[in-house]
Image 1: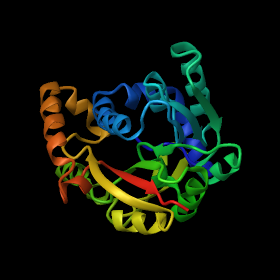
Image 2: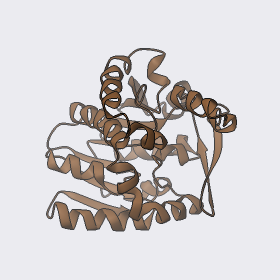
Image 3: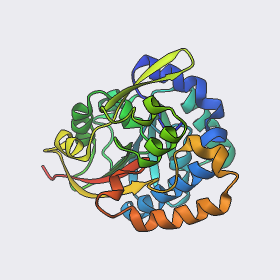
Image 4: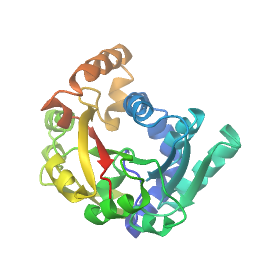
Length: 272
């Protein structure tokens, strides 16, 4: 449930269906909150108050609203019209007047924001970019919208998630246990099929050059499990607290940091 909607019609329609339940199923879940808090701590370290950021795959606006509450303005985009509708309703109800604009615009079309906007930074949370087939073009488009040296923070699903492999293997679901390993999978949501890609760090670094240079990598959900383990983790809330503490120690260690549910990559825009 951590994939954000992107441009392909099947994906956008699939996330239209999820929009009204997304916050209940993931955003406000124990696992969703644990993983998001890990990303938020990095967001506040990377982006200072007064920044104007571009968010792609914004979903229901949880991250944009958080940043706005911390003095950061956000131009947030998503391919799902229903996600944008929920996000717009949330800002009206929760933070009227917040410096956030929500736009029904897919990642593949963000170039259309030129030349009216130039951002201090950009980010994408929880695997939206895993649904984008041409990340090389996305890198070029983002570069055209960012100021020199601007940070780019991306949270993507990893190719090798230790929790997923062990969890599904123990349940005898070996196809799901190893579904990420080939680098591409098809996820189904109701009647819709979504192509999901799992690039390695080396591949991402190559795709985003020469416009960006990779500065750091950290893991998200190394010991905290993926969202589909929520029913089990609700029975063991103290365990989740322990796993979060372990996550903080392992998330920066080489090897471990790419074995979590997600990985968080920090790039800098190369000066022109």
